Image (tube, rainbow, N blue to C red):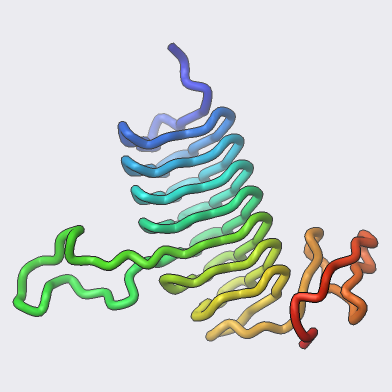
Length: 191
């Protein structure tokens, strides 16, 4: 029986990973057992998806993206090249008594990314952070706290600088989009 998705010869998809139809997994990508990848996704060169990660439909994880256990990624999300979604608030290689840490020694605090959000290249998203629906994270940002729906953040640490439309353009003071004409419910105070 043929696969309903495409896996490059150099990619590794573990038994026990669930992959949706139409998904493309490119060279050197790795998907671990227990990961669930939706339909029509693209995992770029060298992308890494750990077990206990859920990826929605039509998601693009660009080149060398790393997504660690506990992450939940909504439909239509873009994660730019070399970005990382972390999951360990207190990383240590060993326990206080000197033993090498095992899976049971970690407290996983995964990242949540809402539908249609975009994370630019080279970003670091800290454990437990939620990126809201249709939010946008500027390239090179370090996100240390939650980003609201439609929020535009950038910097280190990332700061809210505006709100954006589904199309990616900044919203006007009346919460409308000059580019596509969509209106939006206020999410907070416009910076």
